[in-house]
Amino acid sequence: MSLTKDIESLLPHRKPFLFCDEIISADENSSVSEHTFTEDEFFFKGHFPQYPVVPGVILVETMAQCGGAALSYQKVFEDGSLFFLATVDKVKFRHQVRPGDKVRVEVKNLRVSKKMIKQEGKAWVGENLACEAEWMCLVGKAD
View 1 (cartoon, rainbow, N blue to C red):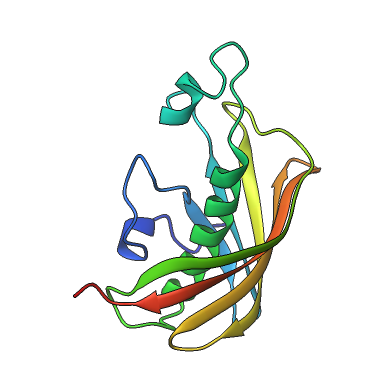
View 2: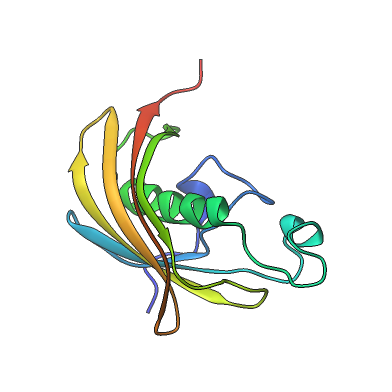
C-alpha cells in the first residue's frame, strides 16, 4: 500500500533528476519509499555502456530525496521549501544497482528542524543492501 505517488508536489526535483516514485510509509521517526531505475536513465549511457550501473552518488541522492519527500508529505516544512545537501557521511556501497532494479529506501530521522534535516538511510534491492549513508540537508526557499 502506498501513501502517495505524487512526489512532484513534495519535492522541487523533476525528471530526469527525480529519484523517488512513491512513499510507502512515513512517521516522525522514519519512512520507507521506492524508486525503480529504468533502462532510460540518462546516466546509463556513460556509466557504463557495456555494463550499466547506477552511480553511487545517485543512490545517495535517491535516499536524500526519499527522506525529504516523506517529511514534506507530513507537512514538516512550508510549501515550496528547497533541500540542499550539505554533508554526506558514513557512506558504504555494498551491492550494484542495475537497470530495472526497484530500490526500497528506509530512512531514519536523526534530527529535524525548520532549517535542517539530519537523516540516515539504507537502500535495498530485494534482500540485498546496496547502499547506506548519513546526510544533512539545509532547508531554504528560492529567492
